[in-house]
Image (tube, rainbow over all chains, first blue to last red; front, side, top):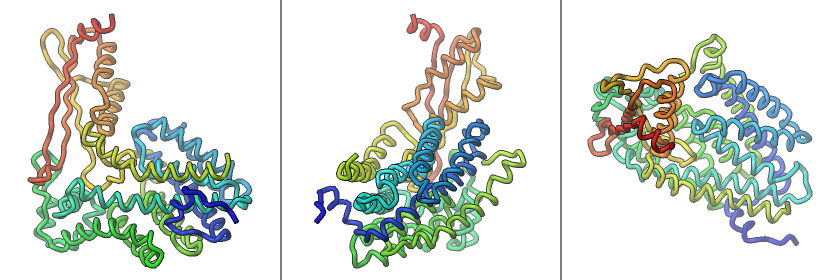
Amino acid sequence: MKETSWADRWLGWTGIDEPGAASSKLRSVRRLVLLTIACEGWFALGYVPYSSHPMAYGLVAVGLLVCAIAGWQDRFAQPASIMAFALLFGVVYSAFPDNANHQLLSLMLLILVLLAGSPGSEDDRNAVAALQSMRWIAAIGVFWAGVMKLYYGYWLGGEFLAFRVAGNSGFTQVLGILISNEELARLLSLGTDVGAGPFRADAPLLVLVSNLTWFLELVLPLGLLWPRTRQLSMVATILLFVAIELGAREVFFGGLMVGLILLFADRDRLAGALPWITGFYVAWLLQADLLQWVAGGQGG
Amino acid sequence: MSGSIRRRVMLAIVVFVLVWPIAHAGLVARYQLDPWEFFGWSMYALPGARVQVLVEVERDGEIHPLRAMGEMRQRVQRFARRRNALGLLVSTEPLAREIFTADSTIDAVIIVTREITLDRETTRLVGHRAQHRHERHDLEASDS
């Protein structure tokens, strides 16, 4: 019988995978992370500071793409993950402080992938523990997102959502339907100069959505930890993320988080979701700034 | 690395993710870091930092806006981006030194920052202005 340490016990709160499932899930999450940072590497070329050094960051994007392709196969998993980590670390270091949160999350996930060891290694406990850690990160992240919404205090009256509806087309399209035409017109006319406001919407549905968001972010992670509610909470959390990303459109962060939350499933559901996530990434790249960048424009 | 140590490192990463947002919120409050940056899980909790930077220079007692071109313009923009992300952790002094080095006729550099935030009570955008004046002779004296 294998010895169980206190670290194993703590990590085990998010569930324990069967060895076969662990190996498959780890493969899928490795592919997801490598795919995400490869796509993001190309996407970022349209934005400062990456657009200021297109040759250097272009080469990094090529390198990350090679890592994603090579890392799709188990036999190249370790070198591809190491190389991807080195490239991404270099990007984060050189672009500091202009770093995206999903870049930092990806670095963390790559460390966990590497700590899990080679695919099919004898001690499957490392793979199981890596997956447990990733699930913890997802649950903690969602929980903190809810806590921070309460702490900063812009969600109880729907102020933040009203502010975003006024200044961000994604939020306007998704949440505009919850607001009367007059109120929406008022918000859209406010502008962004000092003195603009008030960004408080007289729309009960918007306030309800605002409060439901932080409430679910606080409750669903607890549901993910309790075995009886885990699967239901997993589906609900994914739906919450999809709803948030309809407005926020943080596609790469959303892709990573949905992938991490799918790790709460009994089986490797992420493998089935990967083609969909890949499709979203490619569509996003094509519709967003890549074509504009190729044509010589600048991303916003 | 043994399996046990690997798993403890994994647990350490999880603990870091658990406690870092507390430190992050403290840094945001103390140094005006951009709450959206640095993995504090505060994106979309409030509007992101928005800092405007204006640089003025004084020559022979007259103050004019800095006409930053080329490399100097990039330096000012880089300062603005860093100030936006890192808040008060980014000093204005290095930028002032670069401006003095680039133009020996400048006697003083005035860097004005305006942080625009959404006031929680009024839900209106408000500006917080701060001015940093650097005299050439002060910086030269501190160097010698």
